[in-house]
Length: 85
Image (cartoon, rainbow, N blue to C red; front, side, top):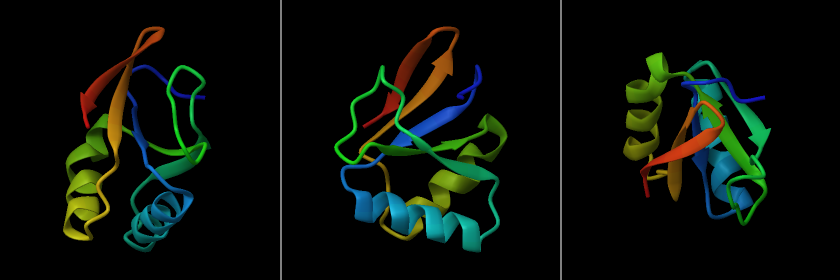
């Protein structure tokens, strides 16, 4: 589901993740709403996945809309490495 090098943004509520998804879709960023990986905890059970190439644009748009995720991880091999939050 999540490929090596992809980012996973975890939000603290279903409302925030849905708002973030709507915003990113409106801006036509390539991203996907996914079930939060089992290795990561999520109060709402959903996460947003995006590629490293889109990281700056995606996170910039979320910051501008005051929708930064609670935590962000990058997949490296079989592990998820926390990069923010």
